Length: 321
Ligand code: EAX
Image (cartoon, rainbow, N blue to C red):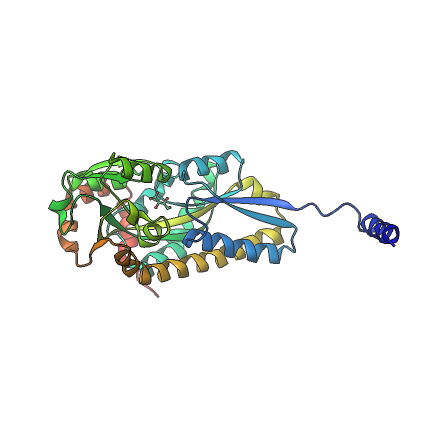
């Protein structure tokens, strides 16, 4: 009996010819799988594997050093990364315009700008850097946390050692507010907070919740001081090797990933503040945004000089159709 089935199996394999080799696509991102980035990556994986009839296998990995992951995509040791724009300005300087504090009024404004001509033009600028900008995902509006004191207004930030992403625009903002900005990769954040190397940090609610930053931070102030885009970046050669049909299917799957990612951000932002309170954080919800914007005036003046003033105006003036 066994012999016959083994024979049958052998024959089928022979007739089928060499097993259709699966192409592996590795996507790295810095957060737990159960996060808004994980949701985006998983939706992309499921949609693309389905569309490509299992000729591709999408592997999702965590790498909480975004800059390193982008470099790996550039040299082709991995295929794709989902990253905040934190370190992206070091690769594609134009993206620094998106990192200006208080630039976006709300998520609808940000999503509209990124999904429209401005966002698409910006994605096109990745090619010159040996990268392919595939789609804009979302990290969310960033808020300040710290372990020293309640922050109600700009003066309360003075003297705080604040971890920032490796991002000149953000560092300028915090130094203008009198904080001591310390740029570091996400991978170094929790140890730095535990050891007191820094007093505070700033991240969207979904990141604070997904990484249990309440365990190392006591105070949360809902500053919404900057919108944090995320971007799916892939290796151009990987995309070029695909058939036109597969490339279209991949782009389509990326759109499914964007939708899942944004839906998760919205859900986490709705439930996250209460969740962090429940976990013991002291939360300041009413923030004098005008006071923060006023205190940042010198930084805004510098951004107008050093970044793309016309683009910043275009973004501010954007309105839904
Ligand atoms: O992209 O480094 C950061 O604070 C980012 O928000 C985080 O890695 C998610």
